Image (cartoon, rainbow, N blue to C red; front, top):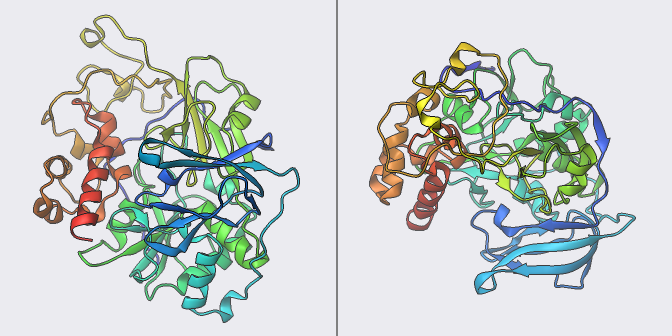
Length: 450
């Protein structure tokens, strides 16, 4: 039986530059990049050395701690460079793509005839396991630990987020194959959350439990949905998969090919013609943004959304898990006595100086300026107004900052991920890096408690 999820606490950040519902083919990138840093906690061991020819789906590297966990090339071509940083840390694998793509053949599968171990082995061998992440710790799922449930959020509420109903239209066959396979990996349910009044392609699929979600951001965050449906206790694990990654998994099962194709929303106030592009994981973002044109040279290019995405610069690459590219003005200008006058062009949950509450439907053209400098935590009570989890956000941040493992456990650290603190970071008057603090706290817990 489905359950409605209604979120009251939160904040919708309405920005100028939403992508028009038009999809075009992006200019084909010459070089694609896979960055090990996209897979948090993974130490890569090289399989495809520089100069190696690979097909799409063949592995570039595997996890040092689990040789079965393979990370595939998104395209066929030659590994032209393995970029290394300090202490020879691998930063990126760069693949010069073939003009005609060739795919490794993993064989078509009849999902209904497979058992859970068969599916698990197939996903590991084909490089699709990295699409499955877990809570707690927000890392790639451990294939040796069965989850109590699997969650998929098909309702995005982040600023300028891709419209998944539009993006996934016509992909019902791939989605059904993927969720049927995932349902055999857990004794619990496969929970799928969709917009309450939408027309999602998940409606009518078998082997899932549907939930209708409504409310402001972060209602679309899968962590919020887990907390409302089946909260995580110590010793429990749930798995998470993004909807567009389901399509890749489903296509693998139906055709035997690892097809890294992804529809990406190009959005933001600095884009002249924001729309959707068909591209591939790891593509150069310049192959997308300059097709639509930019309004200024002083811009920030973000792989992902403005709250949780990565600053990749115009010569960067699309992240492994990202389905949007956001381009907004760089905030390197400052207002003289900006703190001492009424503000009409910025958004804030507070009514002290800004007047955004008078215009609830207004869309804003914001830049990256933090409008203040880093300082000690100030107790304002604002975090609680945008944080819908039944957790004390300020207290858990302080516990992470001082590495207090006992307090972190007691305050609910097993339930959270960095993205759950993106809004509190956005409104923080102390300009503290909340997501970084939570990420470091989760890493410490994983190391010390496991």
